[in-house]
Image (tube, rainbow, N blue to C red; front, side, top):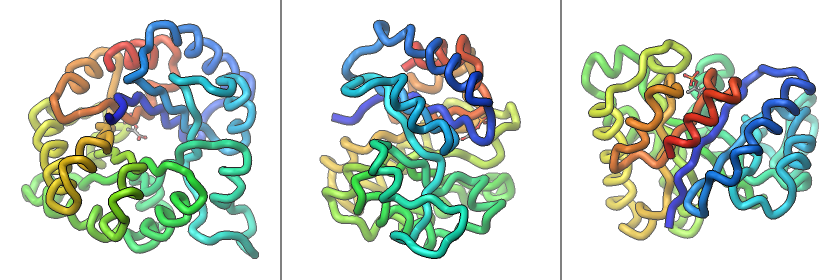
Length: 253
Ligand code: PEP
């Protein structure tokens, strides 16, 4: 059965010391979690090994993620990080297709399909981000927009591969803006996403894939969002950098 996930996306934030303190604070609430829950910490590359060590082996509740991965196996790609490297240090998840990467680094649906493939090839579980810009939402075409993102980046996957993917619906107009999707908007889109999985695959796959909401999730709105029947947790940016806030968000799972 799918997990309820609170995923932290630290983006390009924190010094090493800040990272250590933040993780230590979060680990102190491990006892409040149960087997249905998972906390995924998507931290900057230099901290992956340290955070993995802090979390410890065989931790059922906390795990680490990279925020990106290169689409090629290896080679002359100065400054890039491969799936093989991430797998070799025991990273379990990788965020793929965050809107900041799509917008600032020109990552297309086709490129993201390659990243998904190489991540799965090396046993990494992708957290695939999708979501529409404001003008698409205002035009009421968000369902078609998101459907195309899934069709072009995910729907070539086999049934077994798809079960290892987490989807994060992140409306771009809600990321870092303080503007959260309403409960109804989140529920509608998540219901649509699961219906797409049923149509493309089957009920079993649709019930195996966690679908997270992202976009200005805060300590005071997380629980209401996570209570939507089709929402399986959240991908959290800003509020994941403050231990007390992210702990409250985790409690909302
Ligand atoms: C994100 O970066 O994925 C995100 C949702 O950011 P924020 O929570 O700050 O809106």
